[in-house]
Amino acid sequence: MVESHGNEVGSLVLDRPAAAAHHTRLWAAFSGSAFRRKIVDAVSCGASSRYRQNEAAAAVSTATSATTIKSVSEHSKEQKQERVKAKGNKTNVKSEKLSDLLNLVEAESEAETRKKVEVLEELKLVVKELQVGDEATRREAASRARLLAKEDSEARVTLAMLGAIPPLVGMLDFEDADSQIAALYALLNLGIGNDVNKAAIVKAGAVHKMLKLIESLNAPNPSVSDAIVANFLGLSALDSNKPIIGSSGALPFLLKTLKILGNIKGSQAKQDALRALYNLSIFPPNISFVLETDLVPYLMNSLGDMEVSERILSILSNVVSTPEGRKAVSIAPDAFPILVDVLNWTDSPGCQEKASYVLMVMAHKAYGDRQAMIEAGIVSSLFELTLLGSTLAQKRASRILEVLRIDKGKQVSENFSGNTSAAVSAPICGSSSSSTNPNGTSNDCLVEEEDMMSEEKKAVNQLVQQSLQNNMRRIVKRANLPQDFVPSEHFKSLTASSTSKSLPF
Image (cartoon, rainbow, N blue to C red; front, side, top):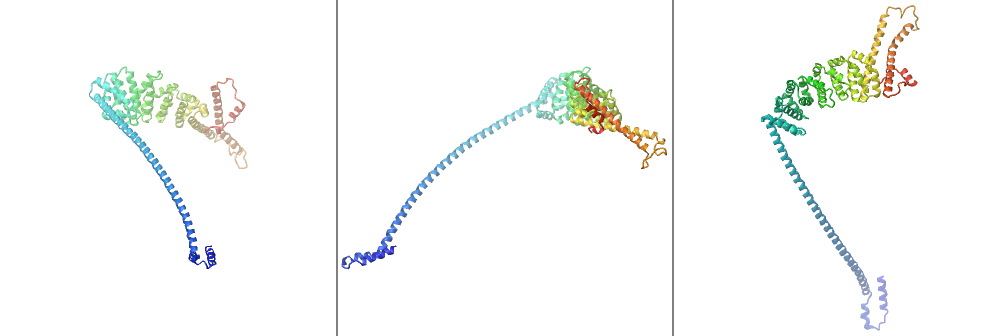
């Protein structure tokens, strides 16, 4: 387009008249090439001006953005400085709190250390007074040792390590009852939860000194006796002490204590004596020492006192673990009627479980005991226990019933074999006069054999029916129903059709 314009300009210049010579230079100056250069310069100038304007605008925008970025950067920097400052303040606060806590811990540790040092010094003083003081001083020291060891396990260990046990055992030789009581209860507290101290007390000769103390008194002080019983209870909890205490003669003393306190309700010494006897009876060799006394008959006669019955049955459970113990229980007057009666104590599941255990062990071991149980009416009680007893009592009752059922089956089998042996010479089977079946077997022999084999089932059915009827009477009686209550025909049909398969074995 520039070139076309240039050509047109050139033609216009050429068409001018030649007369105007003095203007030749002017027109020559406006030649096509020069004109084109002017146009290019004008266009370039316009473009460069627009470029400069855009560049200026961009520069302004850049400056504005830079200013904005700078302001934002400065604002962010200020916020960051504020956060750092706030964090620093929080850190300082936490540091101060941590410092306070550390100071508090240090103060508490120092206070605890001082307290421990003071307690140790006090324990040392107590032991020193026990060892070298006069009788009054030692009595006071024993009382302090009793209080210090009552609830502090560390004090028990420290006192024993400092040597407090031997002088306390030595105080049992004093004639003053107050000194004896203070020493006994100090020894009792030293042995609480500490097997090492219990062994050390027995090793120091405390058991023999206690028994000597009881034997030397014509009328023993009840407080002294109670303290000795409590010590026997605590010391007998250690297995290594059981044979020493059991063979020392402590069992007759414990039985004597029971007899003295037998009619006193809520006596702690009576409970302690029973628990000590239970601990000692756990060790089987001690059963022989138990049987040297009349402990078993006394315990059987004491059953019925709900305050002590469960503990008595626990002791009997240990006694029947040996053959001598089972024999002693079986020959005790009215032993089985008493134990069977306990099975009916529905308000005392623990007693039912322990009584059923004693009877179960004895039923498994001796035929004579099983017969005595049946005569005492155990079957109906066992059936009731399988229905109304606890889970453990039901299992034990079922085992006893199974033993009695097997025993009854053996008895019927023996009767059956006795009858057949007595009739061997009679021409019953195989004689020419008897009829035979196609297999060559005597029909009379088969009929009689079936009759004999059914004797056992008849006996078992009769036993089951009788037991169910007795059980129904007991349930009716316990339910306080009228005496003229008559069971339904459905129940009669059940009892009449019941077999040994219905037993819960």
